[in-house]
Length: 359
Image (tube, rainbow, N blue to C red; front, side, top):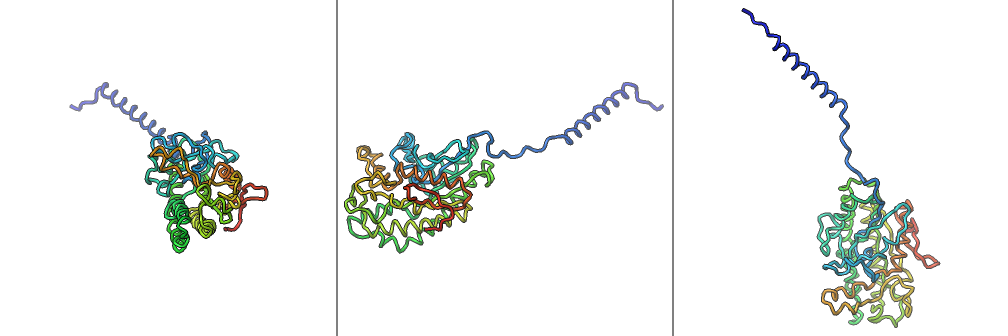
């Protein structure tokens, strides 16, 4: 005898069909009307627009004499970041904050992603990535390279010793200087590339910010009075002063320009930014100078840790120099020029001159 489904079984079949149909409708709705995948986050919109400096003592502010407490030897940190450093002396429309990540004595390795620590701090590119997630970074100013193979500060100290031995340092350094600078160029280019990579890690595009490489201004000049060629001023042989202030700085500047071009960065030429304002050019009156003379912190000599840093401020931009460089940088940042030179004008101030040929 054929058995037919009982009414109870037919009811369950109908119920299952209704549930299955409803699930299919829900699935179709979810598929058809699900929102698009969330885009990757970019620069934070409602965050302070921030200008950042990266690099060595030229930007950290070593030489000014006034430093943040945490970077003037506390827990072994000698980055010597000054509240009066050039980045804090800029006044760029639309910029809300300035942040100084530069550290005295830094090399390109201390800038690069995954690079070595400096005084216990992560690399400056890594610090930039973290900053870029909380602040809207609109510009990064870099000064780096002189502490790599050129070891410019060490060369200056060598030339001071040469004054007392009367054996010109330039005779040893000049023949190899071009090769030394050439070896530096790819390291600077790599550091600039890592600055871009650091911002890319924070989901920035290259058109979200400006990247500027600035060169170095000569701290000394050959035409200084004889009475300041001593341990209280500028103890250098004339021959060495001529080489340091002309060829050494000029070739260093040209190498940095090449690195900026290769990395697609803007370039600010400081190779003539200190003319007439170098250390000791004021003779008995140092108030007109933009660079420190030979400087010794005698109070630090009683402390073993601080004694090693006692002469590091020598031949660096002072507070007046940073103010002038900050003003020139402000002008450059407000132009569309790919390159400019900071030049001393007739009124004694530093101005950005776009398109001026190299020195």
